[in-house]
Image (cartoon, rainbow, N blue to C red):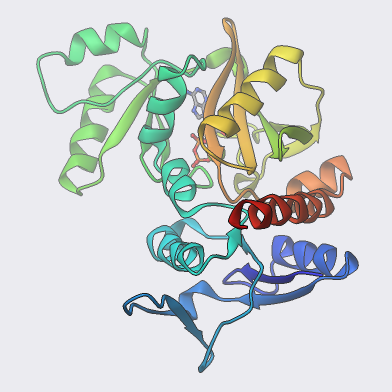
Amino acid sequence: MLNIALLSRGPGLYSTQSLFRAARKRGHYVRVVDHGQCSLIIEQGQPQVMYEGTKLIGMDALIPRIGASVTDYGAAVIRQFELMGVYTATRSEALKMARDKLKCLQILSANGIAVPRTFIAGMTEAMPRLMDFLQGPPFVVKTLESTHGAGVMLAESRNSAVSMMEAFEKLGKPVIIQEFIEEASGSDIRAFVVGNQVVASMLRKAQAGEFRSNMHLGASASIVELTPTEEKIVLESARLMNLDVAGVDILRSKRGPLVIEVNASPGLEGIETTTKVDISAAIIENLERGVERFASRQK
Ligand SMILES: Nc1ncnc2c1ncn2[C@@H]1O[C@H](COP(=O)(O)OP(=O)(O)O)[C@@H](O)[C@H]1O
Ligand SMILES: [Mg+2]
């Protein structure tokens, strides 16, 4: 039996509940801990976490479910637990790396994973050449920390792409510009990785008139079978991002599957209800193996 802390700001959320139940079912003790309410005590040789008036002690494992609005503090809380010797299903550095779209694409592409052609640049003379490289318009403009599609825009012309870049630059929010994969026609694939396996995958189709296939934007989902190539790049992407649990998103393009992002805290509701796979159970079983490996390394 493990003593598990489920880091989540929403005890009533589907993903939190699903993981909670799965952990209980496997006989573990599990407590939902709101990382937003954790105080970190920084003291020589004694990292500690205060929560609801007491120090959290005796934890064996952590399952972080960190929302995008609190990535930095969430990562600091995870790091504190890591320093206390607690095993975590998602490492703090891996969370931070996946949350940064630019860093994620830099690392994946440098390691041979196919991604949409992308650039980030200041306002330079190179702009027209860079735009040629993307073979647009249209172009996809993305803020680095977009989630649920909320920072992803379509620029129909070179001029509008430049205005978007300038506007976001002024707001202190740099963007990346990407080639628009038209042939994906508003669909993408979410592949869910647990350990070194793809446990479930679904095809998400955007609503009519929308190119973003986020479930939060009303996309519909269906079960999809991955090709062996897709499965390979999905697993490789999760591995490169140091994630044991990941949602890897790919676009089916003319030149093969392209990875667009790797999610470190992928939602469970859409994929569990669509595929009927008990992903939470897979996450808990994988956690048990992780704790065991971790403990044997500490000895
Ligand atoms: N380069 C692209 N070409 C075509 N569609 C894209 C491209 N990039 C993203 N999309 C669509 O927009 C959605 C949101 O983009 P994504 O990069 O995943 O941002 P977010 O993190 O906000 O979900 C994707 O699920 C996909 O449907
Ligand atoms: Mg996405």
